[in-house]
Image (cartoon, rainbow, N blue to C red; front, side):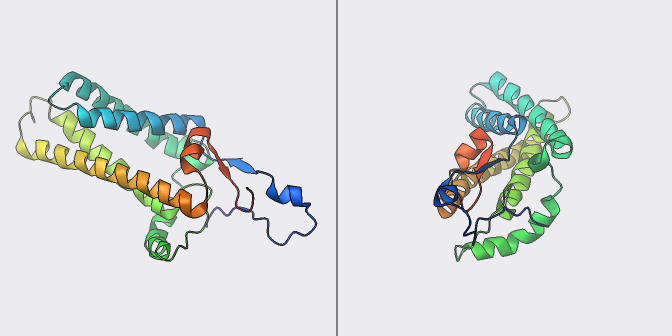
Length: 196
């Protein structure tokens, strides 16, 4: 089941002004938007601070753990588009969705599309591995253990690669659908297709 957006097709009774009026819906709630931007800042700070500012690196690492815990809770008790209820369906749809994107067929989703859902899951898993191994590496038991340190480094690199792909995907999808998706993550509102 997809969350279809009502479209303004073939409605001759509407006045021309009504067809061009901006119509938006609330998608991303304030807690989710704050989580998104705070997480982005923490990831960037964590990326640039290891071995140089270890204290700050640890603080933002623990902040990311708290943010991941919040997102897990919000995925079950948050607003409609914050919940994880459609993750399985969207993940199953992701391969065909990505295949269709090659031809410019993107479909329209109010919340995350299948590619966005795939990115969400990949980022959350990579972040989880990164922060868990990072926290382990400062304990007496695992301090200096090579595979913990290597896993932390590789997972952290994966987070940065995925974050860059996420930004590129958001920009490309925004161009394809003629919608400023970055602004949508700031305001929480998305335009309904068929309206300017």
